[in-house]
Length: 299
Ligand SMILES: [Zn+2]
Image 1: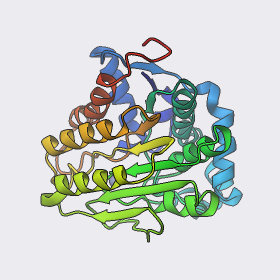
Image 2: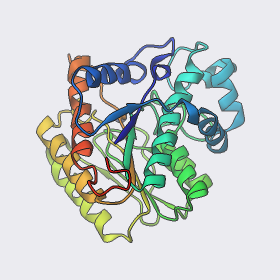
Image 3: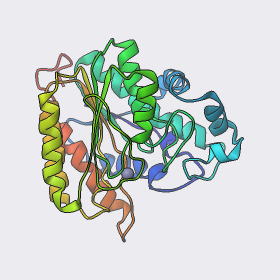
Image 4: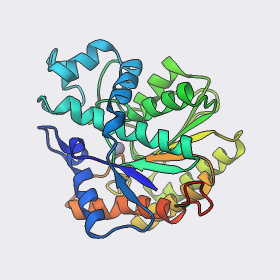
């Protein structure tokens, strides 16, 4: 299974978990490899990713991130601006475009060490999210691979209001969003088959179970995009429950082409980058263990 990453992911002047943890995880994979998982550089998809960023975001906003002006828009995600911000943000979307190409071309699963995505809406960033690579991947699946039913499964601690905003503007009939959160930040108003469930920490396992059971009742999807945030752990959900969540998500996906992004997971509350790396490795391990053995690629 190809997992996308390159050093541009961590190339911004602003340093925080969102802009740095991919490097910690990539280095950890090199030291302690995960069987069945290969780190791949998505750089050849940069132009395509930029094209999709321009399709889902306002040009004034995209130019602001690139040039730094107007500054309030360039820094609307909460980062300080520098010339490395734009290529960093583009690269996180590039990895998801590459993963989408891989998953839909080879009928398999893939992922990217991307974060800082789901709060970014059409006209601005928000909550450490600059460009919405999840929405870009969904639009790429719909327009380039004729996917008619795409599921965005967002289990980050926070709601994916930015993704919903872009979906409603660009592909409302093709994308269903199922969102379970432990925080009301960036909440959105579901319509159609989409749902937003707020869960108390104590009820999280049951909420995930209910969300997945609901997803199983819907007509099958052509493509699943999983935003597998680890920040419910920062809110008090146990690693054991998150491990259950990762297995339940992967079992639900089955043979459907699917990709994942890392999403949230922070050092808040005395956690370290080693802790964050271990959390995200739960997703990587679960997906690597479930690579189809009969894949056309023979991997
Ligand atoms: Zn979050």
